[in-house]
Image 1: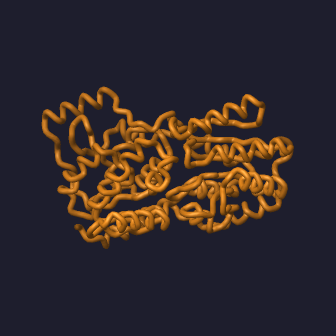
Image 2 (image 1 turned 180 degrees about the horizontal axis):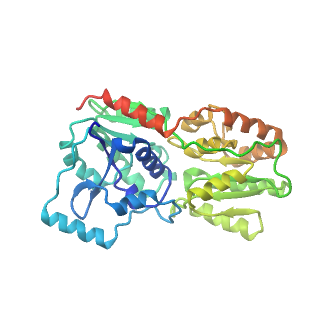
Image 3 (image 1 turned 30 degrees about the vertical axis):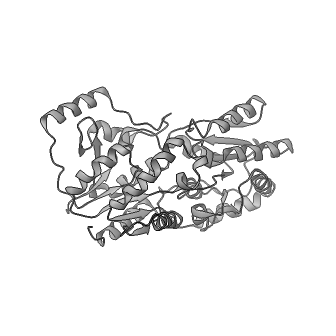
Length: 389
């Protein structure tokens, strides 16, 4: 068997959060299998090493964590300090490096040493330029860090953007920056875990009002405030449905949406917010809903759109940018605008025409979605032709 690719999971192996980037990192590891050697930068040892059993256990956790931050148990910190005193061992032989995460300044400072020991191609995934384009919708810490991160990407041999929209954003930024000899950027769309949608019904289930599901972290750019206003308008107009929200809240940019959720619940509206939950709970939520709404203003890819389609459930989402790329294959009601009025009209339309929901669900089930195995194969094939710079 050829030497494996190094897969940097410095953050994902230390958090049980399953927001988009952590899902990509975990899914890529699973798809690569024995072709990947997951590694981390150990800040306590000051060196790179393969993952330990406790870090593999973190990767295998079902999700539902209340925070994104990395966690290092005190035993791991002590082991790291002892390694620093004893001297670090070299990484096993490998054929290249993939960095699927948005790496921290600490990891960035350690990358040159890792690059020096890597003879194969060194590739980073690029997710989005949202912090650059929409700083008002992004956490201030992310905005401050982002220009440095984009400059650090220039040191790689290639950049695998998760969508054509993300590829164009990074290419345009580097052109504006006047970057000399930037690495090639290739759009490699993400995959999705295969799902087994339940039986397709012609109408909404009898009895309880239909459930509209929204899966996605509660933060400014996800546009939950517009969705909540749209639902309130439809409830006020007499429509009978419940709204189910799932997702980790970003304390800074999601505060207004969280306050609005609490206000609507206090007013007696049929609104359920579960916060972050495990994979099984997410699957049950998809099975129970009539359709989903993903009101996000901008994404690098839009995994919840593809996830909804994979479960055979229509998704209301934006027709613009990367979201439009994800919606284009069918099963989605794609909107030119995702303001409250447009979302309210789309919700009223689907609630009033169950036959259209059934038609969209049929289209969703007919899509041949890329799997993570497809993604891993495409990424590996492209890397094989990259020049080591």
